[in-house]
Amino acid sequence: MEKHTLWGGRFEQETDPQMWALNASIMVDRRLAFHDIRGSQAWVRALHRAGVLTAQEAQTLQDGLERVAAEFAEGRFVFAPTDEDIHTAVERRLGELVGAVAGKLHTGRSRNDQVATDFRLWMLDAIDAVRRAIAELQSALLERAEADLDAIMPGYTHLQQAQPILLGHWWLAHFWALQRDRERFAQSRERTSVMPLGAAALAGTAYPIDRAALAADLGFKAVAPNSHDAVSDRDFAAEFLFNAAMLGVHLSKLAEGVILFSSAEFGFFELSDAYSTGSSLMPQKKNPDAFELARGKSGALIGNLTGLMATLKGLPSAYDKDLQEDKAPVFRAYDDLMALLPVLAKALRTLKVNRERMASALDSATLATDLADYLVTHGIPFREAHSIVGKAVSAALRLGVPLNELPEDVRAAIHPALAGDLTDVLSPEACLARRNVEGGTAPAAVRAQLEKAKEALG
Ligand code: ARG
Image (cartoon, rainbow, N blue to C red; front, top):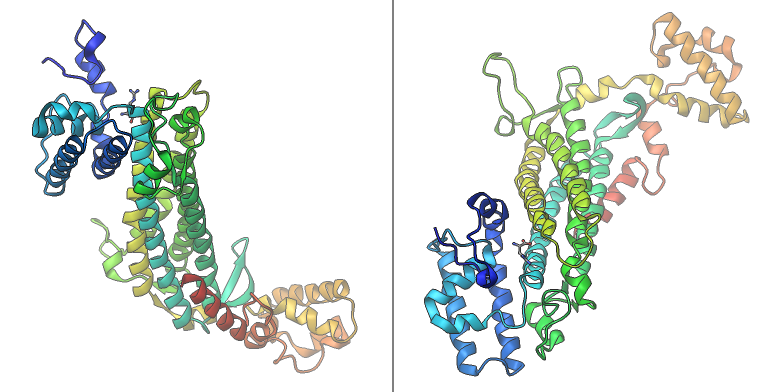
C-alpha cells in the first residue's frame, strides 16, 4: 500500500509497515478531533488576518473544516489507512472535501505547535469535567455529613481506637481533601491556558501572525513566551497527572475506610446492592467492588504520572517523538476518574449507617484523655495525670472491665482524685462537646464546619 504522508517528499522508500504501525498515533489522538479542528479554524482566521489567505480561501477552509467536524460529530468520519495521526486525518479529509486549497492550511504551522495546542485545548475541557465530577462527590459527602452529623463513632489512629468523633466529622475530613484536589486542578488550569500555536516547529512561525489575537480567539489566557519551550513543554500534562494521582490517593483512602467499616467485623456501614457485587461461588458474599476499584485504580493513576515524568526527562531539544507518548497516560487517568467519581458519589449516597453498632464499638478507654484532663482540673500536672490514668487503664485491663466500670475502691487506690462518680467525665457526649474548637469534632463545631464546606463547594 502506498502511503501518502505529509512529509513524504524527500523519501524514496516506503515506510516499513511495522514502522508505520509503531509511529502512528491515530488510535490514541483521534479523540483530539474537535480540538484539532477548532485550532485549525482559528489558524485559518489568523492566516487571513496576516494576509496569507484571501477571504475566499479562508471561507472555503472554514466551511470544509465545519463539514469535517460534522462528520466526526455524527460518527460518519471514515479513517484512511494513511491517517498517521489526527492532524493528518483532518487535513486529508479537508483536501477531499475542498480540493487543493486545503494544502494552504498548514502554512507557517508545524504539527509540533499544533499537537501541543490541541492537547491543551482538550485538557482545559477535561479539567472542567473532572472538577465538576469532584464537586459531585463532595456534595455526596456533604449530604452524608449532614445526615450522619451526630452519629458517634470511634476515631482511629494507627487503626487503634483513639478518641470518639462524629461520623459527620469523618465524612468532612474526606470532603476537604477533595476540595484541595479541585483547587489544584483549577490552579493547573491557569498554567494550561497558554497557547503554543505560532511556535511552528521550534523557532517561531515566519508569517506575521498576531499571536495575542489568536490566543484570544481560542480562549487561551496567554501566549507561550518562547517557541522552543512551547513545543516541548508538557508540564501541564504532568501536573494534570499529579493532580489525578493525588486525587486517586484521596479516593483510595476514602475507599479503604468505607471497605473496612463495611466488613462484618466493624459493621458500621452497609453498602447498597446497586454498588456492590456478589461472588460466583459463595452465595452469602456482598463485595465493595466500587471502593476496591477506587483503591486499585489509584495505583495506575500514580503509574501514569511516574511514566510521563520518565518520558520527559532527558529530552534534548524542542520536539522529540517521545512526546507522542504524552497522551495515552493522560487519557487513561481521565477515563478512570470519570468512571470512578460518579459511582463513588452514588455509592456514598445510598450507603446505610448502623449507628448502634458504631456507638457500641466505642471502648470507654477512648475517654482516657478526658479523664487525664479531668485530673488536670484538680491541679495535677498533665504528665502526672497521664501516668495516673495509664495505671487505671492497666487495672481495667487486668480486671477485664471497661474503663468506665472500674470499681471505685480500685480507682481511689490509684489516686484519690479518681474516687467519686466519674459518669459525666467518662461520657462520649461530654468528650465530644469539649472539642468545640474551630475544626474540632464537637457537634457545634462540626455544624459550623459543614457551613464552611457548603460555602467552599459554592
Ligand atoms: N502525533 C504527533 C504527536 O502526538 C504529532 C506531532 C508530530 N510531529 C512531528 N514532528 N513528527 O506528538
